[in-house]
Length: 273
Image (tube, rainbow, N blue to C red; front, side, top):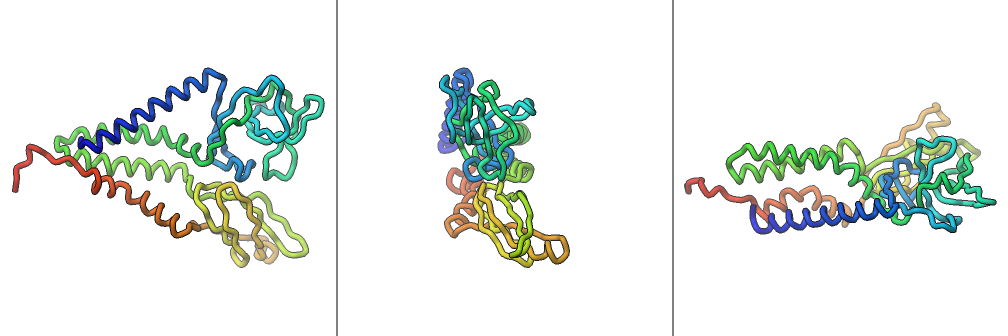
């Protein structure tokens, strides 16, 4: 491995070791982590957010706190919502974009912890870790069968890129929308949607208008076809700025940049032409 390559690998290993130590310390001090699976917290904690919680203080929670809890009506499920009222020890919660208050009353024993750190999009990376780890190990094992150092390195660059693409295909973190509701009034039919992907998107209603959304953002679309034939069609596409497209392009060519900047090792035993 070349000197730049060794530096990158050593730095990555050091970072991973530090993260593992930090996770162990965090866990044994009462911390827990959760990944948001639904869009109920809107832009505060969109789908794919990693939430780190700490034990609730002895004085209890306060209105406005984001808490993670097990509802008494369904103790096997875990929610992360905002506290909206506390009356005589009875705690009421609601998701930021939900239209109604949660149908349960919480007590201190139902609370797992208070959200201390909210990290949007990082949860997607955590979910991808098993795929990336297993895939990378397989790539290293298979490429290790080749005697040529150049071939091994080339296969590893291509293989890791394929593993990353596979993780993105399975998890689909980049673009997503969820339909929250449809309704009709005197102005026509409308659909309310929320973006659940990492990247900014434009959602277009067939025969209607469009909404430009970022992750966790809610938008309302006019859907005239819902009244005309009781059907509607929504489509979504990337809606990046010029710098955004440039960054996306750089990410896509990272394997090529690795080969150009760091390079592939040469085979010392290969005869000169």
